[in-house]
Length: 126
Image 1: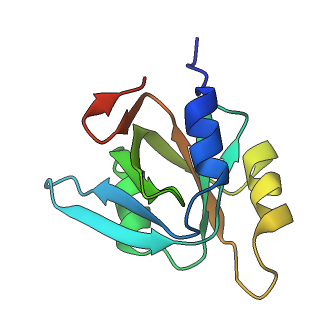
Image 2: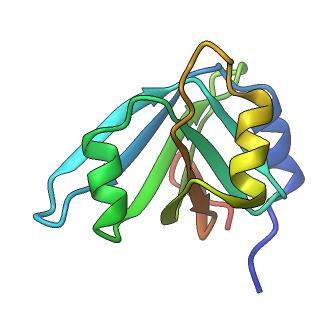
């Protein structure tokens, strides 16, 4: 069964600075981090990131990597979310992304990060 996020994390996500840092890793172990402003918490179980201009990120996802999301809440606390990531151009997650991604951006697909671990600083929340 997938983990559910805590009330603490949900509040932090709702009160985050807009841009998150989304990190994937190549099949050679090279990390790639991007700022992503088009993102959402979905079903309290995964984070969605719109693929508007992915290049290395898309290649890394296709290679089967895990990913991490780093964000700051407006009260200056940091949170890191880790999990398996996949990419989709169909289905409920894709349709959800299309509903909030700006129409001026392409929305080629959506990265879906299943939440496995959550940290606030060194404290493991999940």
